[in-house]
Each structure stands twice: as C-alpha cells, then as structure tokens.
Length: 353
Image 1: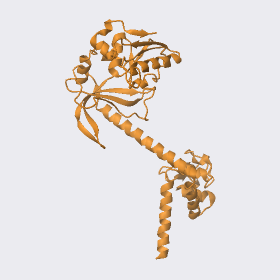
Image 2: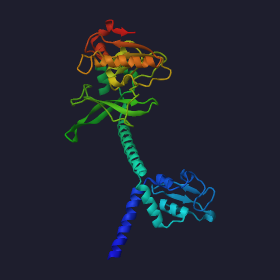
Image 3: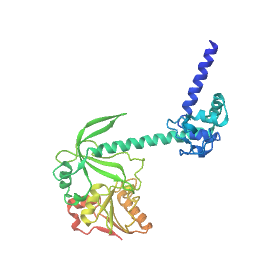
Image 4: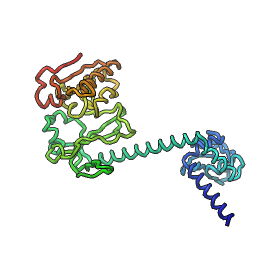
C-alpha cells in the first residue's frame, strides 16, 4: 500500500512539473545549457544524432517539442525532457530534478509572470480585434436616407460628411453596466467611425446609437468607444478626411471636427478627448496644423479645460516644427459644432497666432 502511495505521489510530481513547465521550455532548456542555436525553430544541427541539418525545435504543443530527420529515414521526435535526456545522457528522473530546480528559481518566477502577463494581453488584444471585426462585417457605408445620413443632415453636415468614412450599423446592441453585470437595453441603428493608428490600422470603433429617424437613441450614453486593440489610443485619431498638402484641422470629437471642417473647408481629424488633442501622430507631409479648441466654462480642475488642452496641443505641434494656428470660439461654453449650428461663424472668431 505504501509503495502504491509512493508511485502515485511520484506520478503527481511529474504531472505538476510538466504543467509548470508547459509553455516555458525555451527558458528552461536555455537555463540548462542547451545551445540557443538548437532552439531557433529553423532546421539546424541535431544535438541528439549530431546530424548537420536534421533537427527542428518547433514546440508545437509547448512541451519543448522537437523533431529530427535521422539518416535512412528513421525520424525521431520528443519533448523537452527527451531532449535533455538525449543531450546529456540523463535518466528521466535526473531530467525531472533539473527541470524542477529551474522552475523553482526566482528568474523562472519572473519569466512566468512576464509570460502570463503577455498571454493575458494577447488574449485581450485578440478579443478586441474580434469584436471590432464583428461590428465592421455587419456595417455598411452610410446613405443620405438611412439613420446616419438623417443624423448628419439634421446637424447641417449633409454635404460636409459625404467624404467621411462613416458606417451604418442597422441594429447594434446597447449594453450598460448595472452593478457587477452588463445588461442589454436594446438594439438601435448606429453610426460607426474608425479609430486608426499611424499605420492606418483600425484599433477601435466609435459608436453613436441613433433612432431610425436619425436622432440620438434613448440610452444613458449615446456615444461610446470600444476598448482599443493593444490597450492604448495614444497617437490615434478618427481621420474624417484624407489630408492634402495644406493645413490639417485637429479638434476633439466628431461633431466639433465636422464643424471645423465646414467652417474652413479643410480636412479634419478628430481625437477622442481633449487630453489626446496634442498626441496625434501627424502625416509626414503635414507642415501646418490648425487646432480648434472648445471654449468651455471654467471648472474646479482647470480654468478652461477645452481651451487649456488646445493651447497645450498647439505648443506641442510648434515644438515639432509645425506651423500652427489656434482657433477658439468667442462665446464661453461653445465648441465649433455649436458655432456651425448657431451660425456664429459669420462673426470673427478668436484666432491666436
């Protein structure tokens, strides 16, 4: 009975070590002295049979997996334990003990934490990309008579937005967090805008839920951005128009950027927040930037958050060697969407050189 118990304990020990080593054999084999040239994943010399180009470490199952095409067609394969046994002439128990020592060292724990963190980030990145693609596959270029077209027309941007890459989603689910759970409050038409990075890759989507008539939907928060692929939107923007050789307009928010574009007849890009206004990575050919700020009412955290962010952004682009013009509405509490909507563009808006 005692012997059976010892056997079961040894089996459990092996099982536990295999589990801990899984996915980390590159680190383990390197620590135990296996030359890195054997672990490159390319066809290379074999540490087992000493052939010149027969060996490949592919780690397909994350168990230190390898394959050797031995002479005469007699192939050989194995895992990390087999590789240690063949390379050093160890018994399985000797290989087990050395692997156990390796996974108990502090550097392995650091490697494990790094690997887990990377795996989590990779999974989050894949999930975000899949959700974005799912929405894009169900969306279509907007037309003037769909809810997106009606919304833009009602705001005075019917002609201005014709060149914008907005999409129409006919029935996008709206979820709201209530307590510790997300609850679906319904499905609505939606305007979809792509948030892209400097390479033009889509890293997020901006969603605006609408009614069939083109008004904002009766939900708690009509505008939401999706979690970005990679976790950060720094340097990214909604590129409403393709830039030309002239000045590029920057503003916070889609509607404000459309207002600025309508006022200036210049291509505009929108940032997702005031804080991001100065972090946009500009096209290499852009030499002049027009920053359009909001004339917010003063608040406790800043004298004028929209204005302050615009001034800071303008200085950032000047420091980059760009020619910059800063535009601010004369009336406190307005942005350039309001200026366009109310017709105040006929007045001389304040311009800071």
